[in-house]
Image (tube, rainbow, N blue to C red):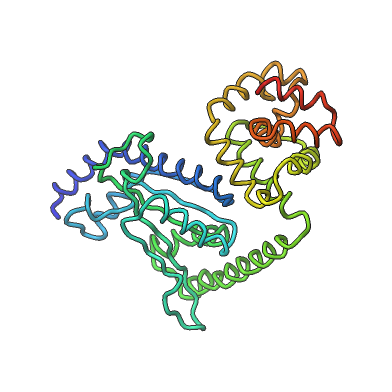
Length: 326
């Protein structure tokens, strides 16, 4: 590729980079929405590739057609808590974003005496996003999604520049030390997965999962801290207003409710949330708690049953205050 052609590619990418930045944000937002519905704890980040990184890749790989050979101009990274969540993230992406190709190195044959960093990458088109994101069915722009565990991301962030983008040749012992850390990544992920499995067998696992889900939804409307013990106390009462057969899926029910009533909830938080003048005065205290989402959901679904169980354990005026908003 000539110098003139490289410079033309550089100028084209500078002109279109904002569109790729917008696409990365849209894909990240959709994954965040889907992860809440699926109760998948994860951190989602996004970016458009730096111009300097784009140009460097064109030069180093001597690409003839960089526009169709560089796939990570828009990039999203999904960081899950442990290796046991990787399959859930894979299913979420495959079922909702229809990847045009997938790289999954987890099942690749590797000797027991070898360490490696498995890749889990997807390429998705803008056209796979819901129509309300503003992309049409013929939009060919694509975004790369990387999925990692938190431990693997920590290792990758530290070692990437040294191992994959070095400014000079690393000594063999340094490279060996960096790859040796992968053994700790495997141990960490395995032990976290085991701990999560043990926690799932605890008697209050359901309550804990609902508290976590309510918190995830709450933070999409509000950015203030809350009283965890109060949340646990009230949600244990609210769960009694849910049919026993529906309780294991109540986190999903909450997510669907919050998605369906998003605009109405957003208006309530804007007018009566903890950062408003009314909220700062101490009124509508439960709007400033994650369990407020569950209270609004039960007021929409089983208001009489909620009132029956509520009045047996909690002050009636708290529920009446929330009912006045809904």
